[in-house]
Image (cartoon, rainbow over all chains, first blue to last red; front, side, top):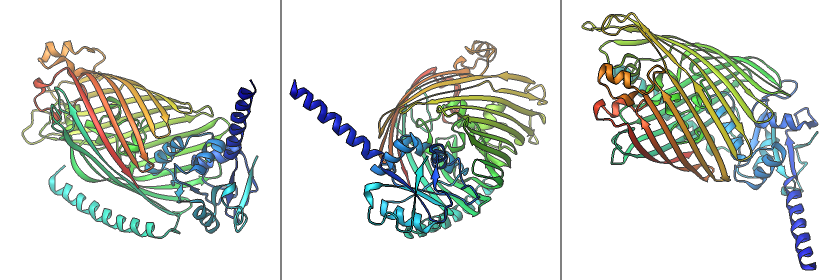
Length: 145
Length: 402
């Protein structure tokens, strides 16, 4: 009985850990972007290319990690409620028909941070664990409402 | 299309392709490339084998390698209110598409009003025609639910009518608590000038020329917050026939009207899709050799996609097509003309498997169990009396993107 109970807590604890690891993606923007927080709906509209400008008119430049990057998978599932393949379908439909600019894919979080810092209107995301030291260096972390 | 016109286009497009590849290579080399330019592309090769009838080449009891798609798509945002985009496409599909390299579309999209939730604009140039869920990206293998799109709705054998045409399309998009709404209203001059299209609309390849005069199109798409998509597309296209000097047809005209209804429901890993239409083809003024007439067709399909693993997807679809609602079994046609009855219908069961090996490499396999030949490409099967009612087809595809 105790063995079963121990196994149960072990599995439950691991599940909790895995769950909390997923929700630790930070939303980052270029410091020139004049927002402090975003609604979940707004974030989804930006990443599904339906919202293409910030309040005030500045064009949004969307940065993403590769489809199979763990931080990308965590971000799309937890923050957007979409699987990576679903998001890719949306981007392909809008970009190959010329209706929208496809998100810019970068190879890792280091490059993503650098590109968001350098690009006016940029938005991206980072796994919180990925860059504690330089997380606030020239980029702005925004909160989800 | 005359040979000289075709080769002139090809060389123009080829020059563009070379220039664009050079630009693409440059931008790949520079990791801080200007985000206002985008170049992306794909290349796909498909193998086809079938029983009893040919599809895209000599596939009957053999393997046809004659289905190739290569595309290069560019996007440029010179101003926040102006988007330029275009695609050059190399496509070879059996005897029905031998054109090779062509300019697929090239459009300027002027967004004269935009805020953070709404965009209004007009697309000008050789514009992509909105039609159902898949038409605008129909040649990008990654965007299709299967190797072949539902053939009776997306008409691969007479595809040039539907793809893109010189014209103008007004569009409006908005997103709010009720989801996303997209509306378009456009006018274009469609391309009816090909043997395949003549075969479909004039019953045979005729000595004269079929000139598209106008196509009006409008569409309304609603993506709800519950991941449901409803879409309606209306098309009204006309073409005039220009007889040759010795021609038993007079200068008649044809007209195609169609309402296409599309619905899709998306769950986490399951997608259910259905599209339904009843196109009406009419013709008038061709003289006694080709009497006036109206024909109402009917097509629908039901499709389930299941992403059972992040890299694997299964698709099952049934597509049903009747080219003449008043003669669904084709028996009247057979009695009146001696042509095979199965020319007027198709019932196609499809099962397919997709494997995204890496984010840029996709492999697919697909099997079709078909009853009827209504969308069988005539050019691949020149002897209509040698076609058979029941046939099967297997396809394998490898597709790469960058």
